[in-house]
Amino acid sequence: MTISGTTSGPELLLELDRDSQDPLHRQLANGLREAIRSGRLAPYTRLPSTRVLASDLGVSRRLVVDAYGQLAAEGFLLSRHGSGTRVATVDAASSRGRAAVEASTRYDVDFLPGSPDLSSFPRNAWLRALRQGLAGLESDAFGYVAPKGLGVTRLAVADYLRRTRGVLADPQQIVLCSGATQAVALLAQVLRGTPLAMEDPGFWFHRMVLRHNGIEPLAVPADDDGLDVDALVDSGAQAVLTTPAHQSPTGVVLSAARRTTLMEWARAGNLIIEDDYDAEYRYDRAPVGALQGIAPDRVVYVGSTSKTLAPGLRIGWMVLPPSLVNAVVLHKSLADTGSSVMDQVAFAYLLQSGGYDRHLRQMRRRYLMRRNALRDALARYLPQATVLGAAAGVHLTIRLPDGTSTDDLVRRAADMRVRVEALAPCYAEPATAPAGLMLGYANLTESQIVRGVQVLAKALPV
Image 1 (cartoon, rainbow, N blue to C red):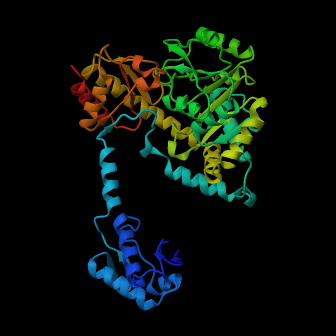
Image 2 (image 1 turned 30 degrees about the vertical axis):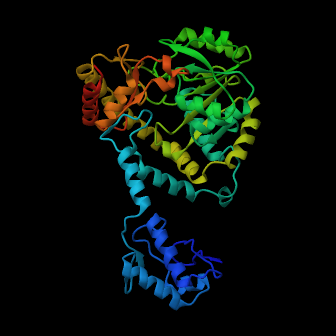
Image 3 (image 1 turned 90 degrees about the vertical axis):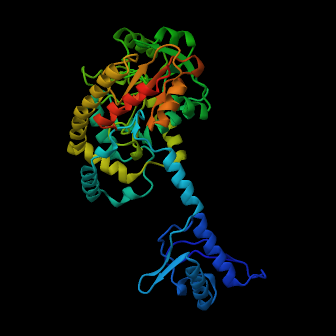
């Protein structure tokens, strides 16, 4: 039995059984034919030369030539002098499957909450930052780096957070991670066994991450003033995951009185996990400083580039109390030994050069216009909706009249190629949630926003 991984051309998993009664040339032709039909070999893929494949498989070149010739005659391969042998376009099963998946998830208007304007990612600035950052990077940095992350990147993040969020950020207490999601997962592993609360409603995916890591979060209500701290005290929790600057998903800002009470609760020996997920975007007021700057020994500060640059970068950070640093670093090391050096280098230089600040200033102006377009469209075409929260962030949450079937609305809108997400999954008990939607606007043009709201008005169940 021989399995080939070619030395030239694509890697091919081809099995030849020399004990079989089937001739080897037929086994080879059948294997290639099946690889093309299943989509393992995509159209226009260049195959290894007959000489190379014969050497890899330990067979005669004539045998491979005959197999290639047979498949070319059947229309599976294209063979042209000077350009080698390539896979022809056939009706592959996996191609049909991919097309069906793509068609099922393509929308004319996608109100996906939490996404920035992906088309505005600063490609040129990022490439320049990567080139210039790499030019000054020592070769040792390409090895297994410290799980905390590169020192130059942690220093740049610390400077940025001190300047913009009032965070008391010691680079030695910063751990870089793969977005806020990994930060929450690592903290859950460290705090397993500690009663931990979460806002209700709160970001549904973080609730899933906590549960996946062995923590069933205690649901503490959030209202028009943010997290109900009295209810938090009554819950018996010793830690809380909260979004005080812009509550997720309602968008309200934690009131001054509750900030004071929450900090008193923390100083009594409890821990706050402050998810500052979109604090860079404030449109009608000065940003509220981070809680971490008030009590750095009782607050874990979590942030990322998912709302500012792109979630696909998977760049996040934690600013930790000294007592948690070693435990978090251990779990980060066991998770992946450290985040991508290339991304860390580019991000560090983007921060140091001022490119990050310039990008944020540009996006604030753009997002404000899109948010205003969404509010105006809701007022005109969907006046039944109540807009919640402060003018901030990259999404807007609306409440709908009592009795509205949100599931029907979401389904009807999808049938008209508009995607919206219901508010209900953000509640610990979705069945008791009020009717509402989360509308992301940052990744849409103003004309798309208006058209999407018009569709929602048509889709609203009577």
